[in-house]
Amino acid sequence: MSKTAENQIIITGPCAVESWKQISESAKLVKNLDVPLNTRKELRAMIFKPRTTVGWDGVGQDGLPWLVAVSSALPIATEILLPEQAQNLTTDIFSLNHRAEIRLWLGARNYNHLVQEAVGQLAANYPHRISVLLKNPMYEDEIAWLGAVEHVLRFGMPHENLVLCHRGHHPNGHPNPLKLRNVPNHKYAMAIKEKTGLKMLFDPSHTAGRGVLVSTMLQEARDFPYDGLCIEAHPHPEDAKTDKDQQLSLLFLATTLDKFWFNKHDKN
Ligand code: PEP
Ligand code: MN
Image (cartoon, rainbow, N blue to C red; front, side):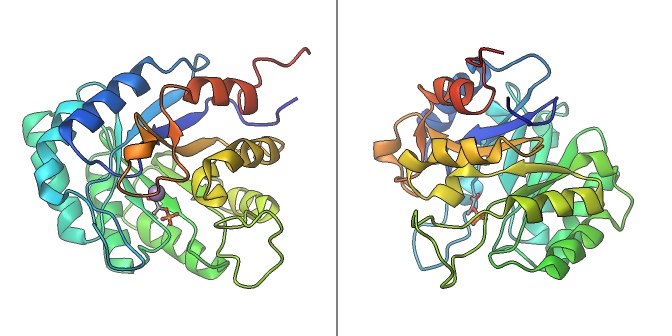
């Protein structure tokens, strides 16, 4: 039996927003994704993409009207890299959809306290509209992760609106027989969950690095009381501009989740 926690949060969608056609199709598929009752679905909708090496870094501001449009269907989760991006994005979206729910996302290579505090301040100002996701840093560093939690929370946002996400650690020369992109440490993630009292999601996509390994990542993680997933899925992964190899097809995501996460096929 899976040990995953109740009231799961499933954040899914493509690695990056690429066009109106792609993100509107994604929004429809995520909206219709069949998940157990009490599961909260959010659409991954990144217009700013942090890049390790030089490359296409998202549609940027041009994607804002698309975020406004999809925010009427689903809560959206979107990474911002700068304090002013967080401010402008939320102001612009709220001016056109005052009911939008936005999760401001801080990824593994997005670790500076100014952006952490800007996001925390916005989430404190809009406790019913803005929530936050904070991933662990690229390398195992508990002080950095817990420090970022403190920066985000320091302006008094509701703790339940901050969720953490374990996306594994850079292999950094450690044994890595499956050749994962990032190696998960579930016990470590659970210790952080315990210490902070915050929800902990798991990212099977940036750990696996390859679509074929996503189910293995899910099977290993479901023995731990994670509160949900950040999982990349694209309507047409073969056309993806970023992380093509690890994105699942949104058309088949429900089958993977049923079988390897929600365990609907358990006999007991
Ligand atoms: C992402 O989720 O978009 C991403 C780039 O992953 P990470 O921040 O975990 O590297
Ligand atoms: Mn990605």
